[in-house]
Length: 281
Image (cartoon, helix red, strand yellow):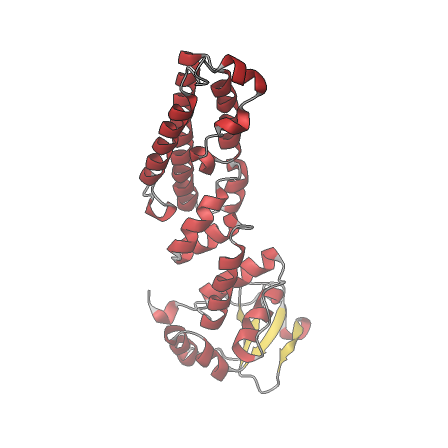
């Protein structure tokens, strides 16, 4: 990409500078660069701090760009820009208690403007919260090349129905990639479920009938759990001890052996499922 066009900002709308609100934190009269947020708040920032905080490519752009007297229009809201500029010019704020939507918007702005300090802070925070916000972390990390965290978040995201996923993963290619990833786990669950059903149909065993029902409830809620077949001990009842044992106190349908064999198949099947970052369209 041509660095000279990296910050090809649109001109602000017709509202005059006098009509726009001035940020309480970024209002120094000697600041040489003025930005305006999407909700019409002015930010006066020192260009020297910008050059220190952002990548060399974008620093050169700021150095070579003649901003003139007009504010530079940015697409982010004032609350997002305030945090972004605080990482450039003022003591950095904490992101630990930041509201979810604001945090991910700040993280996106950090990537967009290549503010390294804020990028690192946001990435570290995402490593801590990806289990609670897997879709949001997946959406961010997949677009910015954080493949390891992308894979971790994708696994956690499998517990959500696709209609919720569609609302979060906005990029069509990313959504298509996720659907393929999700389908791989669905197919694995069906494959193991079919094997359990085959056992039920051949043995008419009460234990395997209950295992079959419990298994499908589990994988329906979360396809990631396809390799967790309900244990025999968890579904066995007193009546099963009478129906499913012979004079040697052995299960005539060999439940335990079949369960172990099927569990081993699950382990091997999981090894064949590619990680999210390895799924190709």
